[in-house]
Image 1 (cartoon, rainbow, N blue to C red):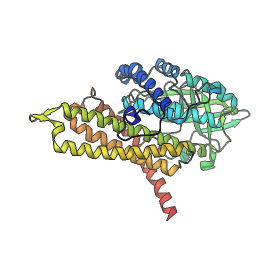
Image 2: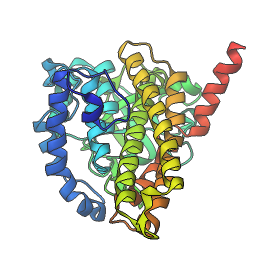
Image 3: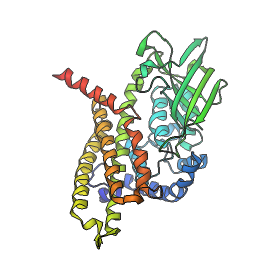
Length: 392
């Protein structure tokens, strides 16, 4: 077997992948290096990744690889998705919103959409012809999904939707939105439903693209709904089951955030080790100094530990055994570690680390959102603590 630890850039030996995964990784890595990396700096200035990049990614099977062949996918296991996340992150290409599209939107459609909905949208999502977004967060309801105010009122065979969403990744050019709405405003969590809304529907309006401190190439927008109409057939699952669906898929999302975070840690450490060996200071290399070696050694040990935890979570997920508490632990620890790693690594670059032309600078600002997105880390602590006290 190929030394997968070397292939994936990990600090520890990994045995998750087989030869087919390795071959797919080679394909994805070449694509990232030729079709994404050379253009990413311009996309950061533009604030958006062009649709052409999505179409090219679709051509090589990077989008929604786990979707079954009957809907146009390759029917791969989730490790193919892991490969895509890792290779994009390893290259510091943070603009393409492929993870939201492939790991959030498509799984909702596949799990709970009608057969007509699946056949209409999944092939286009796989090809990159349609871009997916998830509409959960609202201006007054971030991590507290039960407090959302967007309403969907049923009238005959349609839902009439009014409300607002914000911080929506892929929002500027999405074609399909999995929208969390209150179908029964008085029922709390039991009143939440998920509805797939076609972005061409009258009554839907995109707001401004938001000016963020990081992830500048990843378009993030406000969305407005003023009597936007969706057929009842576009509802995912039964009415009132939306909150449970969100909780089910949030474990996968939080694990994916962990996969991205630990890969970012590995990349930042690699750049730093290379830099300190080249950087001359006081007549020698910065990497020859004991403080440099000790700090980076400590980070290497912690990153290796984090990688083992993430890979354990991947195995649990693929076996159908990853629960919300363990996913929250992974998300919490890895995103906190990511923040620590990029901060300490940037310090070794000195003033250069503050310049956007160095990848560590971009990684530093891009890492900050991971402690907020997918549920703020304070919420992760609350979930973990609730389970801890329940057990004792």
